Amino acid sequence: MEKLAEVKQCTKCKEVEPTTNFYKNGTRPDGLDIYCKSCRKLIQVESVKRNADKVLSKRHNERAKKLGLPAELTPSLVTYMKEEQQGRCILSGLEENLHFEHAVPLSKGGGSTFENCYFISDYFNATMHDKNMFEWVKGQLNFVQRRFYNVFVPMMAERNGMTPKEYEAFVYSQYHENEKGIV
Ligand SMILES: [Zn+2]
Image (cartoon, helix red, strand yellow):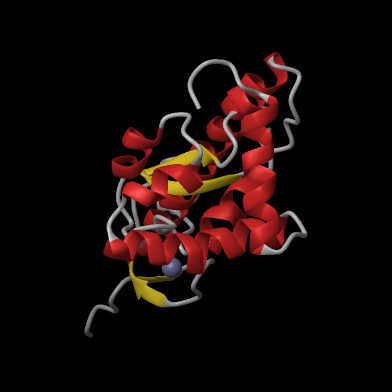
């Protein structure tokens, strides 16, 4: 009689798969993981991401708190903010080396909040420092300026319940009120 192929159902994707598609797990009665290898890999990727967002929200909240500024980030909020930008830099559209940034820097009274933070690639972040973004963008390439005014400003304005013009004026006022040397 032909030997039956050994199979097992994954409790996540519900596929019945050969047992070789499951990692070994000595703590289970059948010695195999309850999830298939591809589901297990997805779960691990998700958990690494969740942990990164936890670390990030904690770090930025602590920095803001020290300065007596709003500190309202949560891990799930950070995850949501990244998803809202589809995991891409708000100015270049690239997925690599994303940096969590404050639109109004902490040194200018901006908090660690949904209304004041976004993701941008390290490439831009490196030249921006604590500069007023509306001044900084004047020295950028045309496509960057277009994305700044067409994508970034409307997003931040909406989060703050302002029109894009009002948001620009608000950012300038933060720099005026917090003039400590470099603007
Ligand atoms: Zn599965």
